[in-house]
Length: 118
Image (cartoon, rainbow, N blue to C red; front, top):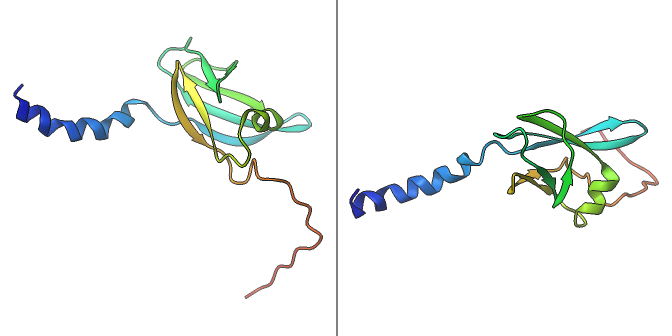
């Protein structure tokens, strides 16, 4: 290939690189016993590839389509305050997965809540 052809393809390759990483893991809150858990789901090419959440190794269910449930208290301990996402690494390739809105926000007791109709 000529240098010109390589230069012309460079922007295209840069744009397509994130697509090669695969779909981002998904998160949602679920009930697990008396507490709430964060369920993280994703896909991996190798069914034996290790999954890490915020650098911590977790045991998953499933093979290529995997899922893991982590107690919210554990996610809170593994994450910085007010975090809006977690790092999910599949075979040492990390991606950010957004957390449910307000999941790690500080708890506040409301003395009163006023709702008005417009």
